[in-house]
Length: 66
Image 1: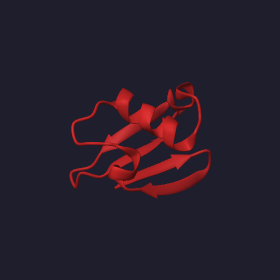
Image 2: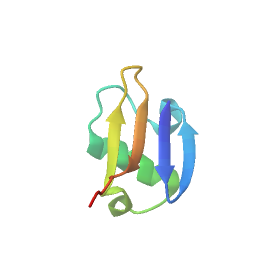
Image 3: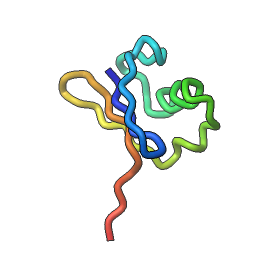
Image 4: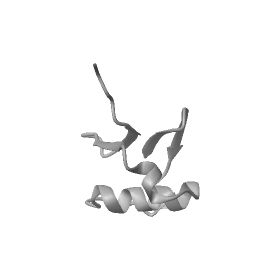
């Protein structure tokens, strides 16, 4: 499962629906997300992809402190 926080909303999308496979790098995953949400790739530039021990992915905006 891919848990996505995008523009203030949360989405849970199956990896197969996104075309995401184990071992893909962040750039490829962000390309798939851009295609899925029909937005330009640069909209995902500041997003972070966390890989959980369960195999799930969490895609979220980068946390900025200070």
